Image 1 (tube, rainbow, N blue to C red):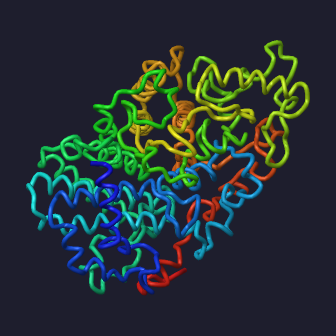
Image 2: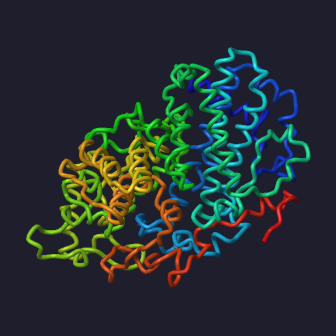
Image 3: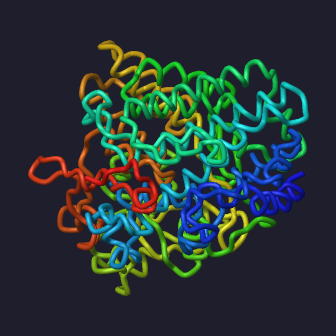
Amino acid sequence: MKQIMKYTFKNVMILGLGCLLGFTSCSDSWLNTDSTQTAGGDVIFSTTDNAKLVINGICRTMVQQHAYYGQNFNGEGTMKLLYGEYPGQDFNFPYMAPGWSPLMNNQSTITQSSSSIYDSYPWYYYYLIIGNANAVINRIDKAEGSQEEKDFLKAEALTFRAYSFFRLAELYCEPWARSNDGATDGVVLRIKEVAEAGEETDLKLSTLAETYKQVYDDLDEALRLYEVSGLTRDDIYWDATSNISFPDAPVAHAIYARAALTRQDYAVAKEHAALARANFPLMDTNTYYSGFCTPSSEWIWGVYNDASETIWYYGWQLFMACNGYYAQQNINVCINRDLVESFADSDIRKGLFLTESTFLPEDGSKTFLDVVSTESRNANKFNSTAEGKAASAKANKYVKETVASATSQAYAYASLKFQATAQPAVGCQPIFRASEMLLIEAEANYYLSSDPTAAQNSLVELNKNSGRDPQYTCTATGEDLLKEIKKYRRLELWGEGFSWYDCKRWGDPVVRNSFKEGGNYSSYISGTFGFKDSNYVSEFWKWILPNRESDYNSAIEMK
């Protein structure tokens, strides 16, 4: 089915949906969608089998290179890397830092440039998903097929739409804590297929409260339809190679949990997090070391990619995989030294990074600064001194003992967490894992009760009971307990696209210590970001509305 779906969807996009909300050359106005108003558009949705191909196409959009934007723009991988990790506090890409520092530092020249491709890409990408989802929602009721299938497919489309509205709000809106209970600007709530919207294509910005209400409403209706359908994604996509990319009820619960946490709606977040992870046991230690490139027991939702569907040098694993193309060129992504060295060596997650215990002599005769370079794109790279060469040799002995498929790593604090299943950049990516849901429960429990027991128990379940750190205990209370939750969230979810988004909703500055300060960030990207003299810097946290919206939407007034 996968091969058939892949081929057919290419034609589906050309015939009916390719220009739905894309910024392409198919029209002078990106909202002109003549192709969906033709008979061809009706044919696409004439049966539920055809509609499944559209859902499959939305899934493929999430791991597809969007050519107008260039090499780095490939759906969820881009949203993780460029927008979640680059400007966050724990990701370090020394080789890229000199050239990419404006984006890594979220400088106003990037975030406030409405004509920039970096500003418009998330808007384009998520409204592309929304537009295709709206077409399913609008047309599926008239398709031939069982009512159960129609209900399930509509639920999937609603799930996609809710996720996309939420992600747009994360980027283009103020954090909830600074929104005056949601009174600040939200996003444009396009909930009709453009072919049916008439003059309603010109829409003003909603409030942030209205945006979250739409997310909740879509998820409530999706969950109702999943339930009345009586079906699962195993039933609908039984012959797909993998169904990890298709939404279902647990995915809707997971989106609900993350959105509610971001909205500081802690009771709702806790409820849905528990429901989302109910049938997704945490992975064991061996699986944790298997590369996060194929779905495991705890993956609730992810993007699917294999060698038959490779996007070559545009994939997320190109940069992130310890056996990927960049790693083969001795270019590595690294973790924040301050963060990872704060964990006990008994924690298996620490073992997926080249920390000091993996490259320094046991006798303590050498320090971190003795064996690495501290300048430019070579920052963190093992230097050419005898000490540096010895450190590199020790580190790479550890690499081969730990992850057999990994190439030699040239940088201290390099990541071994992610692998590619084929070259140069093939592999799946997690979007939601049960681990995140447990962390949501821990944080929600912290805010919901002065009794620390429930939050502590969530951390124990994640860290000790799972085997991630058999020696873990949690006795922290008060503010120290919140710091503990944040700390383990930062390590557990490292590299998966959370860092900047978390700092934004927490109201925490992004702090990257320089080598002189005991950290491992070069002068290009070290410092404190998001706050200046303790004052909130909105330009670091809120991307400006792109002119690809405002130029064609007369209801938008740029401020």
